Amino acid sequence: MRIAHSVSEDRVTEIFPYLETDAQWASYTIRDMRAKACTRIRASYPEPERSRMLSAYDAEANAPDGADVFALLARQRGWLARLRKDLSGVVRTEVDGERASVVTARGTRYPFHRRDNGIWGLTIFTAELVAESERAARDLAVVTSAADDYERAGDAGVGEASR
Image (cartoon, rainbow, N blue to C red; front, side, top):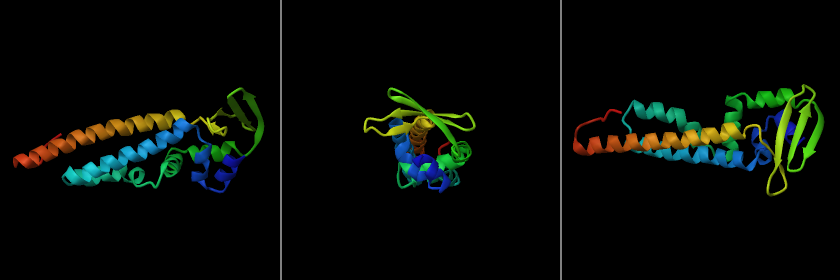
C-alpha cells in the first residue's frame, strides 16, 4: 500500500525503501560508478568526446543517492507508469515463507522478498538494476582505459589519442 500511495502521489523516491536490498545496492553502485567515470572524463577526455560522455552519465552521477537513481530510471524506463497502471487495485496478497506476491485487479503479480530488516522488498526491478550496475562498472573500466590513453598521448605530446 505504501508503494501504491507513493506512486499515486508521484513521490518515486519513497518507493526505494520498499525495494529488495540488492536493488537498493545496485542503485547506489550505478551512481558511484557513473560519478567516478565523470571524474575521469572531466580530467582526461578531449572535446567533443568529453561533453558527449558527460551528457550520457551526468544525471546518474549527480543523483544525491540511490533513491534518486531509482526514481530517474523508473521514469526513463516506464516503471512508474507500469506501477501506476497496475497498482490501482490490489486483489490479494499471497505469502509463502520469505516470498510474497501482490496480485492486482489487472492480474499482474508483483513479487516481494522479506529483507533482513523484516520489510518486504519489491523484487521486480532487481534484475534490471543489477544489470545496469554491472554495465556501469564495465563502462567505468572502458572510460578509465580511454582516459589513461588520452593522458599518455598528452604526456607524449602526440595530441589526442584515438580509441
